Image (cartoon, rainbow, N blue to C red):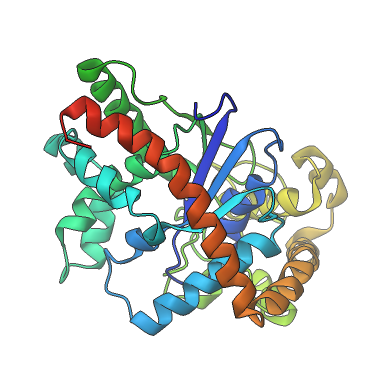
Amino acid sequence: MLDNRKVVFSGVQPSGNLTIGNYLGAIKNFTAFPEEMLRFYCVVDLHAITVRQVPAELRRRTYETLALYIACGLDPEKNCLFVQSQVSGHAELGWILDCYTMFGELSRMTQFKDKSQKHADNINAGLFTYPSLMAADILLYQTDIVPVGIDQKQHLELARNIAERFNGVYGDTFVVPEPYIPETGMKIASLQDPAAKMSKSDPNENAVVRILDDPDTILRKFKRAVTDSGSEVRYDPTEKPGVSNLMTIYSCFTGKTFEEIEREFDGRGYGDFKTAVGEACADALRPVQDEFKRLTADKAYLEEVMKNGAAAATHYARKTLSKVRRKIGFVN
């Protein structure tokens, strides 16, 4: 631990318009941690460049992702909000941990296999080794808890393995982090294919609800959502994956249990249910969207948040890096 307080860390890529999957599975949960914890929330732009980016768009989305953090309730006075590339310790520790990560471990990462298929013309070394950089992101701040979606659990397991391996060679150096996976919302599925994760890069716009979609668009997408045979609103991920996904979304936005939702829509059919989910989503996102518009109009404020966050993050990162450099034999 850095100063005897528990530490939480997470990050989101600025690689496209964020979805309600990003919101419900990650950002919304960031506000759940108590103020007595040290909380680091990062815009992970170094990860974004494993896929080719248009520079102007990457810069714009970096500002927008930071603005969304704040709009979703993360107060910069109480959380360390920063941009990954502005804290050089991430890249430095990333290279060091590359040398303590096995080739076989990286080759088993399912996301590498998925992204290699999607970007077959650009299977670069960064795409292969970015789980080591993710481990560095986490271990750099002696993180105790990492809020993750279920699709990132494999990467966190690798970070734990790397920390334990390094500690085994050099003695106690890194805290071995634990995952925090919320009971609901840990994986929001595509509205058009309930077997697949909702992805901001999905070419089918009807499959994805974005945090910044207007209310009419949100309602239209939910009305077009794939459901299942029959007309009963019942939570059963195996037999009714489409309806179960919509129930998860509705539960996250309303706080209602699956049992309460089943009673609410007993005998009412899918049409009423899909409309209710769309309206609940639009209502919940409206204040976020309003605050986002206000923040993105004040670029100077966002840059001040970036500057202060990078300074605070660098302060803590240096403590870990100094220890790591000394243990592996670098001259400080």
